[in-house]
Image (cartoon, rainbow, N blue to C red):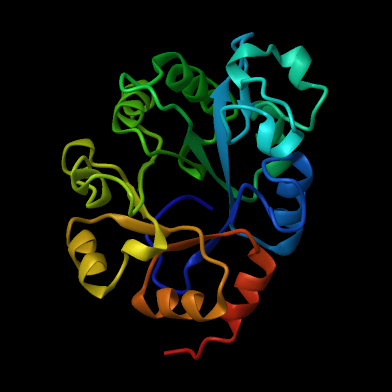
Length: 242
């Protein structure tokens, strides 16, 4: 399996793993996604103080663990007190039969060149090739990764609260990613048609409602990023065949 445009039902990508069943971005959540039959897993990465690439979404530990400590202020040894894996550990758990979407987390305008280089090296050592896709809301970070690993597909993330150039994916014309990853609120038949004509695959996030899943499948998106992969797969099976 590899990232490519799909002609049939959209692929089901587990958002931070099966994150309604287990703590997000943990090995347990990735295992649950695999057991549910998801096509792939979406996860978030950043660097901690010791320079290791860890799988975590927030800048700090407050929401999940009640601590104000920032991830970039703690070494891996301290993060081991919590259920926070490294990217290498996550990829090993996900295994060879699934796709992975690695989101680069950085709010720096200049991106994070070291993060891009390290993620590229980790994927290369694991021979992930086109089974991996690297995405980011940060166009600079995505450009840095493309320079580090031009053969790995990329995806530009965007949401409705961003400024118009970002929420309409203007950087994509320069970056030429494999895929666009719009928030579900930004997609309709007109937008999808425009992006399709440019050759982009379309992976939509984060969708759990069966009616919305059905509508997106009818539009013809390539992938649905969901917190509940088992329920999403069930909703897709209930769709009438053309």
